Length: 449
Image 1 (spheres, helix red, strand yellow):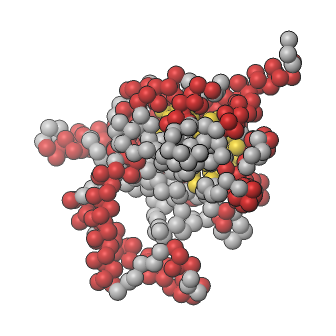
Image 2 (spheres, rainbow, N blue to C red):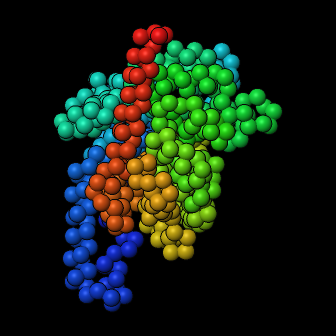
Image 3 (cartoon, rainbow, N blue to C red):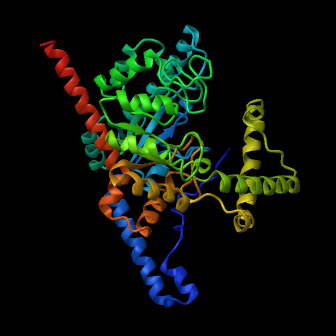
């Protein structure tokens, strides 16, 4: 979908505030306004002081060229340098994602080519395109050093280990290229692991969890220093990872299954095991994972509104395949028409919000609240899944990042707690993973006693 964004920070979302109390007569209007202004000012101060880190931002290899890159306000993207700078998002984990294909040598080769292209693109961004504005970090110390220089920070996660093929030496290669977390599966079983959606490695309907190769991969990730990401593998695989991994687990983009029962979220037992490992769950702001029922109702109402406006305007929305068939001239004309159409939809969006409101930042922070209550403030973090389907009303691209901090302040979180949620916990898990790797490598170097 083509997005037309404004770079000015949106007016803060007001979920519960003194201003709202003033409308009901509980607080004088002047006092409410002053209290609200003070709360927003405090939130802005916290937002500027803490390092804000988002563990899951999908990328397109086409956005690492001289003509199209993250220094620009990229149409259709939720994260680029202008939006990070506008919203105060300091660290973006850029994702080397590969969809699951056939478990064949040709499939592995194609997947590796895709991963290689994305690794190369990220390095091109930080080394050639915009080294003055963004740097690549592989440790918590590097994150803090780059941030102190006034630059944005890129980190690298691998979503789906499928590109490894059956060559575990590529785990070291991916580490050397900057990867610091990896998921063994995505949607559908990989050669390493069953997936969250219920597909099986062996195709026999039995939850097998990890394959033998997957168990070896966990040991090698521990040895090398790559965090074990549990967001996409199956529950059975999760249980094996919790038992096998010597390093803390991390979920790069998952929320609470108790709050919203979808397969990608984690149930209470999984969350407790993750916390027992010393790990962290990065709460994901993907609307259907935050509140599926509310999101479905809003989507249906918005679909009706869009269809009504399209008919009134004589505009025919095209899907990605249809757009790809257009000539450049027709494509440019279509994008211009879509911008007008999108503007008309936004102008009437309140009609839908009144009867079927969108999933918003408050709903997102409900998951944070629940998981903090369940497993503690030291084991919860934040992720968007931007450019991979993520976004909620109020945090629909990186330019709106402040609204998350504001809602946390509204809920009574302290600056220390917000710092942990926004990245402190994740960086601690990275430090501990690297410490485990150093210990294992030292033991390997010493040899058997």
